[in-house]
Length: 303
Image 1 (cartoon, rainbow, N blue to C red):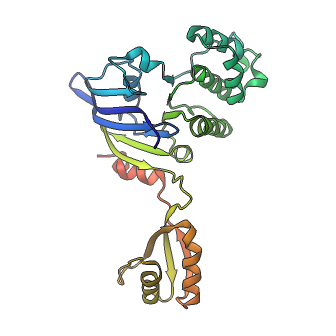
Image 2 (image 1 turned 45 degrees about the horizontal axis):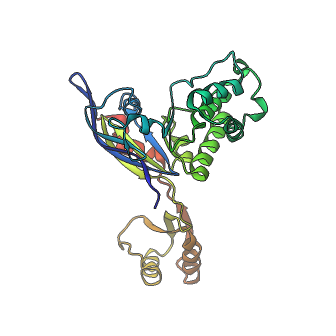
Image 3 (image 1 turned 90 degrees about the vertical axis):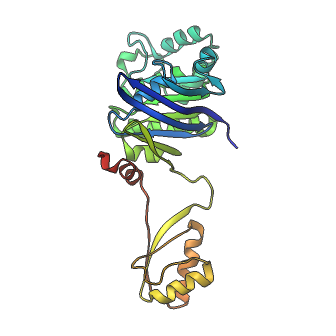
């Protein structure tokens, strides 16, 4: 079982009389990409700033790798790499020199510089001045800087802002490698739902200061459970076959035949229905997209 490396427990924050975070709790595990979604003004950036202790929380606790961010601030922050808004880089210097500067500040062995350059795919451009970099390259250099000290948790606030599709894909692939191969927990906020669906293992949706939904996005097991609609000529026979052969209950008066089943068993179901003359016409996957999750949780962004 993966360890929890970032935990928020009953966290609240108000600015004056306005409550911007209301008793939220979540856990991010090592090797997991955890998306943090919400409409503008819902509290995403405030939450990230509280994790980083850029602002104080009013109530609750935040722990990073077991360290309380208030009581054990330095030890907690040693476990975090973060990019909030723009990466902290100097454009008049080369990419490598930027990394050397931050390596000295963090007392990191310079051998680590080539490792992170390789990881973010900047090794061939490392000795060019950053002012010649594209926005995507600057983002990846910022990411390299945050990875120098091998953090347990990587926190990114809207990391794909302004990137073109190629830049977004490259950043997504890098983050997946960091999380799934190096076992780093990645906590990322974004408003690009389609991108988050491709990137994340789990998401939390925040709206009106509260977490209104936590959802698993991917199923890492081989037997992925899917919802499918079955269209047939003989509905009554199909209901009977599904019950007898696969132990799947469907109401006889159901207008639409929908079942949840392991993806590996779908061909077997189709074959059985065909052999027993149920008159099968189509099997249609019913995807539960992140967009549906988001708008259902936030009531379309309206209350």
